[in-house]
Length: 136
Length: 295
Image (tube, each protein chain N blue to C red):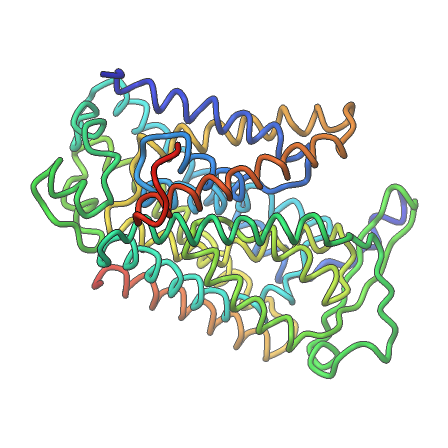
């Protein structure tokens, strides 16, 4: 048992783990709690019986037929935050950015400059890719 | 007409079973979820791939902090691989949605490709042999790994001692991770099926380190979720029951894994995977009119 304490774990790994734990728990709660109200029929943006009618269609056709709209980017979430199904997506968004937050937390603890650069590059790519999604 | 609640309930039970099977068989949940849900449920493959990605990332996020603290997941490897996988997984996600939406009969091409990839995974699983503690001599360590100091250690209870390890073939591994990221993003499959053999057999990571670091690497696929969110391809009605099912199932599976023989279940899962691959290929070819409708 004594030997276990002698294991060296990178301080950047510990910083990464701490932030990941916190935001994963928050993300899951934010996703599941509004979804429970959604399933109970409260404030639905896409009524469940309508979703069921079209969920066999590709995403583009689903939105056209079910909601008479075309979805580009994250606006459909942020512009409809009064609805429980869109609130649930905030949890998914938080889960998506949790690795990014963890990377930022790890950068100051990186053991070499090269790791600071690599984590920063990964974090920047992460942000760019999320922005690109909103434009596509 | 089936009531709307039938399919979310089905997804919950279905993912609960996958969650139970996964730790017992050592086969990742994501790799079973997408092909089977595509065949068994009425949901469009877009929604299934979106849910598959969210599920794979959430599972990884839940387990990675523990694995990092134990020294099993290697953050130095992650720092090298993440910049590659972030980009390629996003490109894969864009291509996957483009194929299914922009091309005539695109969804059938996706099903066909998915079937082929699944059979490839099946082939990798039946042919690859896991090496618990691969021997990596000092002279095997490549210059990049040496310069970056990619080493690690963890306490191994079965040996009652600390195990130290080194990594080899880093440049080759980086290129292969690029390809894996593309495929994972395109099909929402998760990437454990490919990460683990690559880290273990090509890069010389001990199997426990390979499995744990694979989970850490999967978190780098998270931005691909954005593609599905931005296309409206993530619906709570599919995602939430799936995540709850797999989370609860994995806890039950971890308990069962201690008492039943894993080899039998592993082969059972590999058999299911083969069936799912063949069914997806048949459905894709049927949709494209290459073969007559038989299922």
